[in-house]
Image (tube, rainbow, N blue to C red; front, side, top):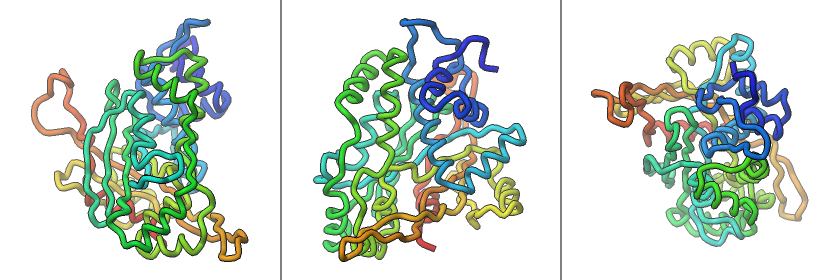
Length: 351
């Protein structure tokens, strides 16, 4: 299936997670054939920005599956049935605030990684009920085949002062995980569109480290202040910039919902339908996870909070004739819907 010679994607994944985990990811996820072309050998071996983007998405998808038991069970069933998953998009939450230690403000912490990988802003979505803004980024080389990123920013200045002060206390000692070495490699990647295999191998773990919590353990008192006014910011306090959710693109969300409910999976009750009718979404409820907090006396206490989840999306094609860019085929509607997004975000509200 993947050719007689190793391809750059497999070689990268083998080196990063080992052959067994790499083989599992390659079997579970749909991958565009152009990313599976046998690679050059020796010192001339390269990894394109699309290959590096795909590898990063696979590492982040695997991380989410490891943190969400319902998602792990879903993937197990898919593998057992010989089915594959189309990773449509991953979602990351950020804080629109200066002064978060050395971490850049809001979406910039993530966008500075995505742009050298060939990602560009595709849509902006006001999430007014949540006092947030969402933005989608698609990869130029394979926009329908490489997972998009949906990056949301929480606007601290739209909340009362006690909330803003709690956010500052939680985030003020955030660290920047992007090292000078990683930044230099991203510059090279942006200039050339590829890196040597050794460079890509070194870069990918540093990029994956950016999708995590970068601030210290929050205080329980601050968490309670945040939770009272924004379940989304409370989630960021414990989970940071980790994938809030990954998404399987499916043909029929309604059918999938019925099947997953019959299996006893923790499914959202309602399928969300976009204003155009072309984008339909649902999700598992968020996993429940134990997280550490600092109590008033400085001791560490544990509390169960919402973690991440797996989403499902169905996308129809855009109406009309094929565009020049699409040549002989129609274009998939890669947009998002603010109402859908805000309903999906509620999967991580306390229940």
